Length: 274
Length: 274
Image (cartoon, each protein chain N blue to C red):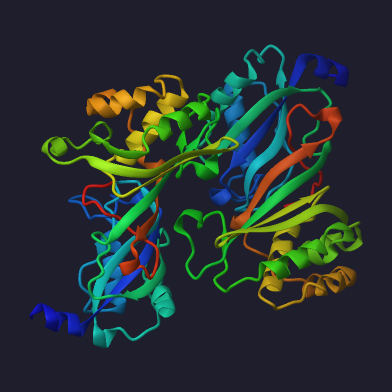
C-alpha cells in the first residue's frame, strides 16, 4: 500500500493520556513488565480492530506518572464512526482505572505526537516534613529534613536557558551526541510542606528532570550552593551533579505543540526523555 | 487506682494523624475489618507497652480519609522518654504507609481530643470532566456531567449558619435528638476540573458532609435550585435533600481547639460525625 493510499484510508486520532505510573514499566513496553502504551493499544483495538501502533510524545520511565502525555494512532476510516466525546468514553471503558484518555480529537494526517511537540512541562512534587503524607505517598518524594526554598529557587534560575545538560543525564550513550537543551522555566513553589518544581523545556534528556529535582533538593539542604550550578553545567559530568530523585514524584504535566498542529495542547520532542 | 494517682503517673500525648482511608473501615474498629484506631494503638504499644486506649477526635466512616484527625492517649510516665520529634519517627516506623502521625505533643492531663474540639474542617473533592483523573481516583468523586459552580456556591451559602441539619443525616436514631449544628463556612472552589468543597463547623452529624456534597452537586447539575436549600432545611426530612456523595472524596482536613487546649491545631466534637 503506497503512502497516499494509506493516508486516504485512515484517520489519525490524537489523545491526551493520564496515568498513575505506579504499576507500569513506564510508557513503553519493556522486556519484562507492562507499559502504558501496550494497555492503551489493547483498549483501542477493542473499539477500532484495525488500529495501528500508538505513538507517544514521551517515553516516561518506570513509575513516572502523566497527566498530559499525547499519543497518536491511525484508524481505518470506516471504523472511525463516533464523536470524540464518545471515543473517550468507549476507550476508557476498556482501560484499567489507573490509565485514562482525558481528551481525543481527529488530527491532521501528518501530525506526529513526538516530532511535532514544541515543548513540555514536568512537575516534581516533594513532601518536606518529618512524616510523609499518606495521601501523597505515591506522587511525592518524602524529604524529611527542612529545605530552604530560597536556595532551591536560586539554583533553579541558573538552569534556565540554553545549556549542555550532560551532567544531568544518566545515559552514557550520550557521550558523543548533542546534550544541548533549552529550559524556558524552572520554578519552585511551596504550599505548606508541599514543594512543587515545575520544569518547562523544548526537550529533556534521560532522567534529566529527576536529576534536576535531586540537585535542587541538595541545594535546599545546603549541600551545594546555588552558584555551584554554573560549574556543574560547565563540567558536563554526571558525577558532579546531585542525586537522582525517585520516579514516583514526577508527573509529565503537559505537552505543547506549535500552531501548525494545535487542536489540543499536548506532547514531547525527544526520543530519549524520561 | 484513683484518678489523681493515675494522672500523676501518666503523661497524656496528643497526635495529629493522617491516613489514606481506602483500606480501612473508618477510624473506629468495627466488627469486621480494621479501623485506623486499632492500627495506631498497635504501633503505640510497640513504643509504649503501658499505653492506654487511643481517643480520636472524629469517627470517620469507611473509606473517608484524614489529614488532621487528632487523638490522645495516656502513657506511663516512666515510658515517656523521648522528644516529640523522636516519637513521630518511632511510631511511624511501626505503622503501615497509609497511616502516619504528622505531629505529636505532650498535652495537659485533662485534654480530650473529642470533647475539647471547638470546630473542624472537612474537604470534599470532585473531579468534573468526562474522564476521571487516574492520580485522583482514590481521593475524588468523578462527576462527568458539567457542574455550574456558581449554583453550587449559592446553594452552599444557604447552608452557612445555625440550622437543624436533620435532612442531611442518614442516622434515623436522631429522630428525637438535637440536630442543630452551626456551619461557619461552606466554600466551593474550582481549579480546572477539580472542584473542592470546604465545610467548617462546630460539629457534624453522621454522613452530613457527604450529604451536603451530594446536594451541592445536584444544585450544580441544575437538579435543584439554590433556593430549594431553605425548604430542605425546613422540612428536616432526609428524603428531600440530595444524594450521599461517595466516601472516598472526603478528607477530615483539620480540627480546631480553643485556647485552653491549643498546643497543636486539630480535632472534632461529635460522637456522631462522619
